[in-house]
Each structure stands twice: as C-alpha cells, then as structure tokens.
Image (cartoon, rainbow, N blue to C red; front, top):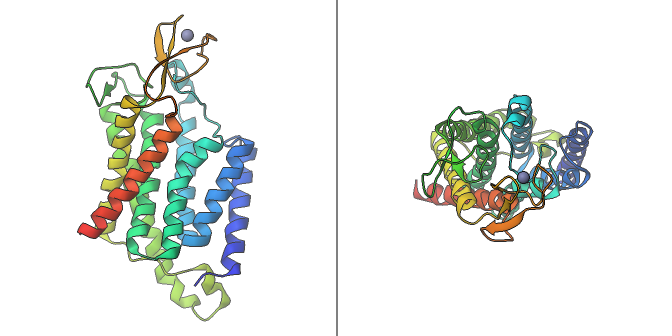
Length: 288
Ligand SMILES: [Zn+2]
C-alpha cells in the first residue's frame, strides 16, 4: 500500500511546512527538526489525511497563541516557555500521534486512527484552552482542590477553558472524519493511476468515531489538568512570593523548587495526556 512516492511526499511536505513555520518564528531550530520528524512519520505511515490533521492543529494553535497577545501579556504568565515552540514542546505534542501512526502501519486497525485523532484532539484542546482560558474574566480553579488560583496556573480549569477544550476536541474529531470521507470519496477515481499511492484508503469515520475522539480528547485534557496540579514541577519566587514554572522568574529572580516531581515539566504532562487520550480512544472503539 505504501511506496517511495508517498515517503517522498511525506518528506517534502514536512520540510516545506516546518521551514515555513521556522521563518515565521513559530518554531526554534530544534523545534523545526522535531516537526519534520513528526510530520514525515505521520504522513508516511498514515497518509496525507493524518498529516493534514496535524497541520490543522498547528495552524489553529499558532493563531490562538497570537490572538489578543497584548491582553495575555498583562496576565503575568508563569509558564516556563513562550510562543516559539522548541524541540521538547513539539515532541510533547507530536510523539503520541507519531506513535499511533507507527502502530497503524503495523496493524491498520480503525482503533489506531481513532487513537491518533484523539491524541491530536487532546493536545489541541489543551493548547486552545491554555491560550483562550487565560482570557477568562474569573479566576480558574484547581481540579484537585477546587480552590481558586491565579490565571495561567498549570492544572487550573475555568468553565471557559473547559468549553474551549470541548470545542478544540470536537474540531479535530470533525476534521478527521471529513478528511477521511473526502479521501475515500476521491481515492477510487485515482485507483488506476500511480498517484493512488498518495491516497491510501482511510478507516470509515462516522458519528461513533466523532464521539469517541471528542470524549477521548476531553479526557486527555482533564488528565493534563490533574497531572498539572498533582505532579508537575513548580518553583517559588521568593521576591514576588508566587508559584511559577520558571527557573528564573519574569522579575529576574532565581526560583526555588517547591512541589511536584522534578522530571515532570509541562512537556511531560502534555505527552502523558496525549497518551491517555489515545488509550481512551482504543478502549472506547473496542467497547462500541
Ligand atoms: Zn519574581
């Protein structure tokens, strides 16, 4: 089913888009390398539909990162990284989807297509909720203690953030179903030509698929919030008397390790939430 032509297309598409994102300052040098690796893997083993879904995630997330950028800067952001995505940020979002594409190449089960879409849905939901939830009027609550905490705190959720996470998940689920339908509608027309290699038939993705991917994506973003509150590494700025993810605070003061696990940063939490979403999708697909 797969061929050198599709591998070549995978490499070219990933190179072009990642380098374009680099020139637009959406990615660092190492972030560009990670994006090429994740993009090419997903395209080569899943097909253009899978690649397009990652592309939708990347474009919408970048757009929301820049949306009301000035208003967001006023909310003192305690995240340890900014808008230009580095290697580990890209890997945190791309590793689980790429893993699902590899599993699908070994065993083309519809469950792995749903798992892939759910992993993308989870990271999309989390990015949208982070970028837009910060703009909410009221202070968010920690999912673990339900206490109100400052905006931008890892593990905190607001009703706006939850609504946006649901929207972000549904967006990916509907995009995946539409792209798969489009591909499967036109693929037979090309069956006799060499181009057919570029349009591998995708698993049928109907209402059950949309439901599974949306629910699994939201589950992943809840796992993200719970892990963010329970185990994510947090530091303390002695000068501002504030919790932060940063090792050097926005005020310039070196911070002290305060809570969580030292090896768990935001990237680890994002990766684990994508894995949780993929596993949930496999489970739900088997159950339905
Ligand atoms: Zn400070």
